[in-house]
Length: 263
Image (cartoon, rainbow, N blue to C red; front, side, top):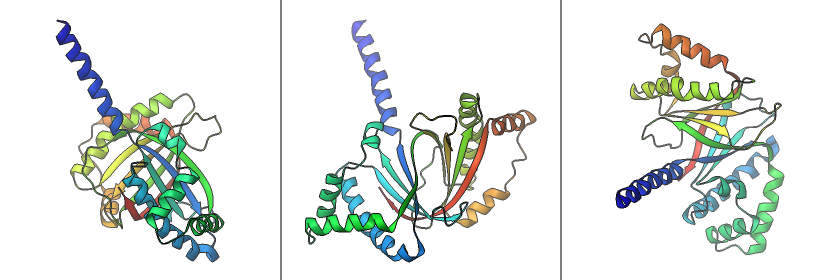
């Protein structure tokens, strides 16, 4: 009996560990670049791509994306979005220290001296303005095997749960909207979908509480998805959708194109 109980406990612990390992923690950075600094910033972006690849190999981070904004924000607000993927919340909050960044940079560019690396990183700070940073945790996602590559399209939908509707909104995304997106993926109308919650406590004046990532392989799939209407949904399902929509305020939709994805 004790042996069976022990095996049961180990099984539950193993499942919990697997679930924890699958949870993604993401840091979004919304970056503004002045027109006269674009060349310097793109040069720095190419530099950082190699540095982040080392960080992935060192298992410091799980991935890095670089997105170019297509619509949804005033160009004077920001033009680029980067995402850094972490394995757990502690790693996400610790981030990459300055000394770690120097070490990864020297590994990526062995011909450069440490002083040159430090100067390049210091100069890079002058070529961009970090308009906003968001720490997010993925709490729901579709089952798919979509592989992101250059040219992939994403709609980052910024949400704020209505007052007193936080849990109701999350339930709606998981129980109502997730199955809808899963069905669209199976019909070839989407590549992937995930639902994110802010990982840090926020006050009532916060700009966002949640975000959805709607991923499409190209514009053709994106527009086909926009035009699709599910004629099979029941009146009850439509009512559930309407109720879910009222539980949140869709603050912004940022349509972006993927330039680089490292995993």
